[in-house]
Amino acid sequence: MQDAKVINPAELQDFVRRDSYTAFCPTNVNTEDGSEYFAYYDGSGCYLDSDDMLLSASEIMKTLELEGFDEFINTQNRHTRLSRKYFQHTQIEGKYLIPLEYLRSDKKQFNPSRKWSFKCGNCYTKVSSQDGGNYFTINPSLNWN
Image (cartoon, rainbow, N blue to C red; front, top):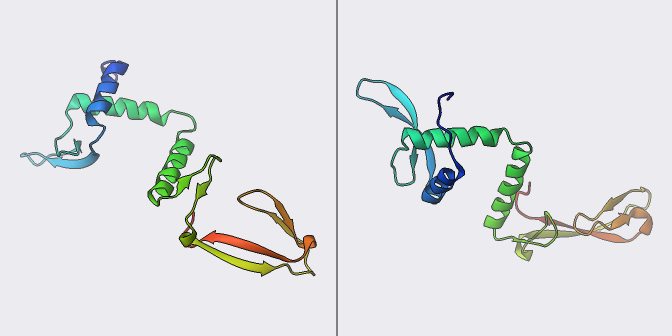
């Protein structure tokens, strides 16, 4: 990698634009002499040549050095997973509108002998057992992470 050519941003943009709708899949390549190599192919099944692989490898290394990268990716993946379930993202950061058919609600009564409280996970209003009466829990019926 020390003799690698310098890649300018235009080349990177061209590479991404050219391959933005194709997969980037790893595979093993066996040669006629029995050697085995690690290579990548795109969504059309064509192997990436050494220039494209070098470009990808150098950009992957730069990306791995970014601070907060995993946190950013986890947030993006969470949004993607929730969006795939057709949950509409709200204007409030990190909140999603979940269709009623995916919710489970229960009415519960405070135990008067026990003092405790909680904050609503949606509106952050404090609810206390000292207020007495009932409270409702609303939870997604799906496995929720």
